[in-house]
Image (cartoon, rainbow, N blue to C red):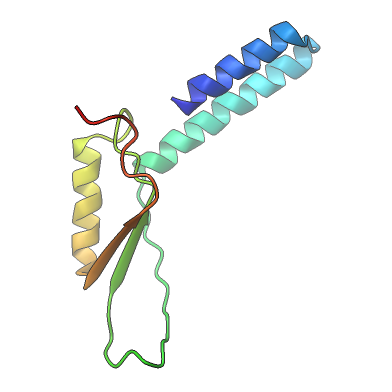
Length: 107
């Protein structure tokens, strides 16, 4: 969705403030590559492990933090299930979800 918005803004700017065709092609290529990169990252969940040491914490604890899931047009049930499976493999004590959870209104 954001890729289409970026493309619309790009085309609108080209009409209002024409730029040389070489620059327009280059900018369009950048927009398309960023869109593809975003889709790739949305579909390939990665796990980053961090160790935190808190002096008042008496026992070891595993916390999973996931952020900006954006369930909607790009992230469907199957990908969400894979994400949940990866989280369950870690066997966390706590799961924290922050950022945007839904991309589209729930019906």
